[in-house]
Image (cartoon, rainbow over all chains, first blue to last red; front, side, top):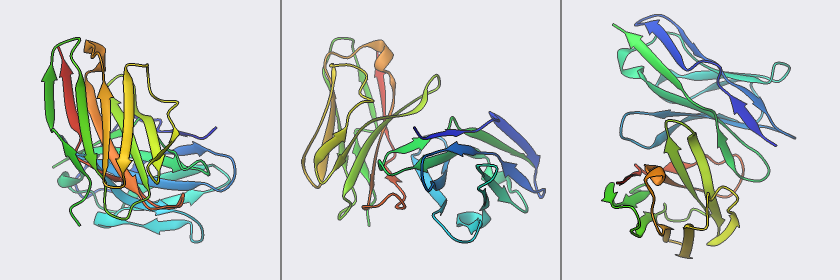
Length: 112
Length: 114
């Protein structure tokens, strides 16, 4: 069975500092990994995905994620956080069943 | 591209009433998913369709829940009878074929059952 874990309910970071939101996964076969962001009263928006190839994936709004097969991790990163990045972030894995399974979400709070 | 369209945005109903949530996926997408989001349980996959055919409904909580996709451009999620514990935000999402395709979400329907 496929699963995703986001160990932090909330991450606090000062504006301008780098941010990391953690994610680990478990899946049979090749993982297809995704990050989504959710703003209040909105649906989830796709940020980036890892399919194969380069372990550093670049996505929307300056976000990137690093795939680490040995640690089964897919952490979301950004070199310099903005207040407007404050939102709920979800990691997700989609396996051969085509089901997209989400983690519990991490609330990112960027302080000015 | 208008995106995934859900209606209504908000629904307030009394316990025991029938509720129908509607979704129009992105044209050309082969997959359609229904999710439920609550504080306690997070995002739960209820059911998904491929080419209008239900593939996996193992997430549907009870027989009170049913979903249909009569054609490629429309799906409904029905709750009959509704209960207060069904209160949640219900999301519809669609995607192209392939496990590497991202899902595109609608803005959700916030259901409140009193």
